[in-house]
Image (cartoon, rainbow over all chains, first blue to last red; front, top):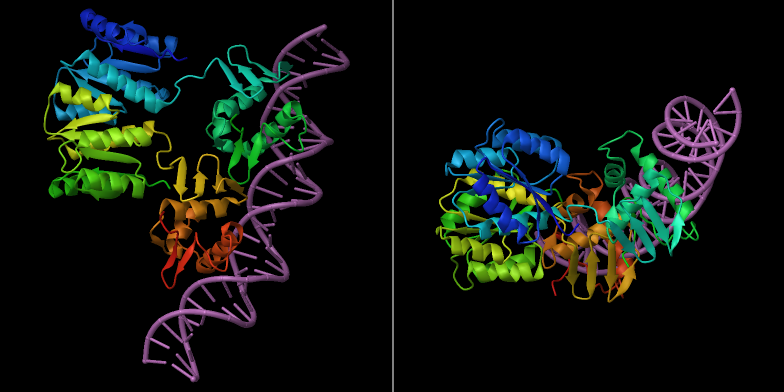
Length: 228
Length: 228
DNA sequence: ACAATCGGTTACCCAATTGTGACGAGCGCG
DNA sequence: CGCGCTCGTCACAATTGGGTAACCGATTGT
């Protein structure tokens, strides 16, 4: 969780080693790939938090990898190249890359850029165990407990609660909840779905659903779990 | 709301104009400054969503501005310099800059980098906590407090207050308030709506609504919250 | 096969919010 | 000073938005 996973892709093994070493000594977990196809496989397989991606790759070039990654994920991408042409930089950024670093570069610089981007990406991954007051959620087991007592939740109820807990202190719109707990961008009856799901979740977790303490409503905005 | 505000800082007015123009044509709202002190004032005053910051500045240099901004805000910073030394790049990134662009650069590239960083920042626009004197607004929680006491505001009341607070010291026309608190460009009874909403808000927040201290009227112009 | 569970959909309820309009007070200009 | 304009005040009615719970088809478990 606190150890972000970085996918490093370059057809030169020595370059991969240099980068991997620099990032590993900074505490990152490294996955490597040496061509574009391998990169795409690794993305699907390992779900990295960030990709350091050389442009000149065999099989599928770096731009194409970037395009596909951007198309189906929100994983940040740093492009690497030996060239300095502005057109390439612009093309990479237009494909959705988050940064563009020209070789040669100092490993330290790359590390700092990785850091900056991860910082901006937020937590990157959901923490395994989340505590909010006496509420505890285990995101690997899909189990929640309240003051030590297990809660009997359905999958969607758990995910809804987990989303609120992970964002304790913030108000989340029904759209955001739909997206994060249902993985749905938009749904015709989505608002009513969330409303009903919240009602059901409250029946299960609130000591007094008429005076909720864990899931509060912000009228016209959404729902929130107070931070503790 | 959806129009991100960029602070552009460079002691060369022509450079500021070039950057401002490129970003304005991309739909961003631009605030400018020509030295480091002005930049810091603008940050406090305008609460930009991102800062494009030249390193070589009179009064307070770009690194120092970056350090202070990073110290007290989460506003993303792009540093600009004519130099290409890696040490400078690394220093900037270590100070917490989000990106580093060397002159000369194509405006298009800068725009894309601004975009990438704003994308990574999430909503970008909304500052989390705003203080004006003893008034505090938490834009993530939709909660406002006055001298520590919570205010019971409706959504539009909160947004109206947030708009005034975010622009403390400036007079906002009823049109501007309509736009920012209601997301409406024009409305037939808009003036009366704002008038009523202001009245209601005053009833809720002013110790003595007959002698308002937080929301003042500027006759024929609009309303303002004095800066503190 | 049957029962239980899940969850999207729908209908209803009601408190809160909000837009509107009327009226009077205060302001500023000629 | 008179007058027109602007702003503050407040009541009313309509709408909004969230809570509640039932319905029913699909799925799962026994």
